[in-house]
Image (cartoon, rainbow, N blue to C red; front, side, top):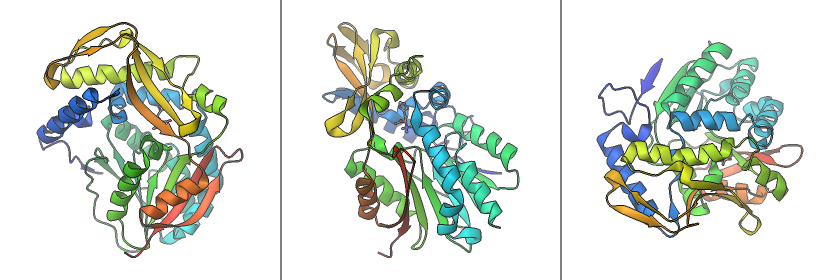
Length: 340
Ligand code: AVJ
């Protein structure tokens, strides 16, 4: 198994949090955090959720009764896996490359469909979390030892280097889980364009997106009764403290995650319970938070089918297929890279 650790800077030190593993990445993370925390409203970019503990908490979220997206997407992928792989080149498909592979438990359905159709694609997993990549490796070695796996530890929002395209059939890129909903349109389009930059005309992208559904259902998914999402939200401050040696007290913040109907999105906030002064450590200086001031940690958008297809089209992919879960809560769009 080959391992490309583009963020590790060759130190040989085991990577725990991708943002800490090279001098450049570290400096960039400090600048990004400093800038985000000075904004109005203050923010912490959602990629900082995914340290080892955060990745484990997210995996726990995916098993909560209220958190419907993961199991809805998984059922859809399982039901449509053969149709998707067939539409993406069938036995000729040379590679599947997944951005934000996480635990990759959903991807197994696609790899198995490819094997059933007589193919044997390579699988390339890209994730910001070394912990998540390790889980991917274990899971695939268990489920499908015959699939060759490459791992890329990378923050794909910054820079991305992939192993060279294999010879032969098309590549299928996967961007699943509804993560595209973490960005506003402009950034979402830029991210998809960057993915297209790594692909050749004729290659494909499978994009998973949360769809507009009942607000109460969406609300419950981010306000679970066991409090796991609240803990996941607060954990972002632990990770910031670890990276920046800042002094946020996670317990001084309430989890607040409303679904804003008009904007078709969940907004995750951490709200100060009282006035706070926080030492920012390596970010420099201190900040004053007013009582009840919020720090926004994530947006998670719901889309209509037309909005998803529009994003693909704007990024240079021709939409070719659309798959939707039975209750219309999750959609998968398959697009093909257009000639420029
Ligand atoms: C992994 C980004 C798809 O937006 O639903 C889960 C992250 N945040 N609960 C999402 C998340 C709160 C998740 N994504």
